[in-house]
Image (cartoon, rainbow, N blue to C red; front, side, top):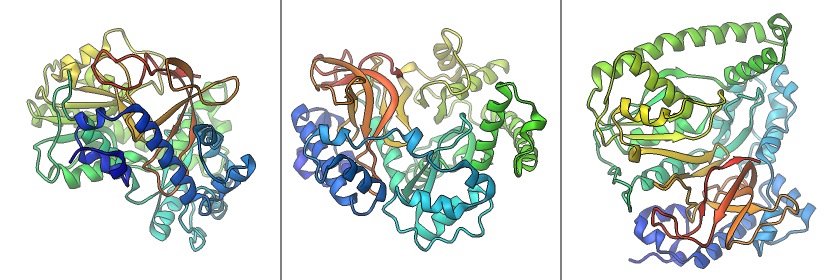
Length: 442
């Protein structure tokens, strides 16, 4: 059956169609579909999400009839989902944290009992068990975590998108996997198996749907408490503070001890993780999900052990772009890393996305990002705050809507700036608009 946007009642339905079918959709039809989805989400959530209702009243919007309306309802997630009082975390006032996050979710949190919560981890567990809400937090490099609520199962959209993206098309090799079968592939991730971030849901889904092999990670768990503490401590010391001054904070001496134990255990287990790769996975097909610094460090660790062409050449590397803790990496690092791992650059998939948005775009062979119909990306004029025309070549701040989000309002304006090309066909051959060149911080 040919793909018609009228038949897409749920954005997940797109994954039942091939890339050829999705890429043949008319651009105007896609724009109309995206506006229709945003308008429907607004209607569905307006009376359920207090924050959205307040935002709508502030801007006098009862219905979304244009992208101009939609853009008035975007917010900076770094401010929105960090708008709690950090003292609540240190003083254990997770009842107030629950009241705060209640404004962002359609879930009923009125019966959640957070009175026994001492740490962030306790609070996350309470919300999950008592209300079916998964709290997801940012990396914590700034020392302040963003917290956003998703319903259990909502994040299945992330690995479903990934698996769809791995289909072959144009110059891209077919790296797709068959759902419901043992694909004889092992997933590696050079960090924790379980944490309060989307990676956990991705790994759960993969183990359930694509392989009977467990995901191979370095360590079992990292709590949001340690992620927050590590970022706070690093920033405090980098700004000239002394450790003894920092450790006067509540529970900080205990957290400092736990962080030291975590770091020591991680270092030992990372060495064992690398040894396991060299001993047991030479020549096998793997999927490595990682971040830029992690993939570089892994390559260097293997290089130090004189390893080359480690994995089967149809292995898959999925890497979130950008650097978190470094300013740069050596020139040519990507090619060297691919040579060490034994994976061609065509199997190295850099993604553009963020914790706050479930759709993620894979970089094409020409080096650009193509927002799919389920990733609503708008450029905002930095002077006026209005959406730029979706024609020609436009540069501005990037705003997004996530059609997969059903339990919270997903309109956000990022801290990124990009250039969209609406008129030319990308060198990869794929039709439709694309993010041209590098995405930079606004």
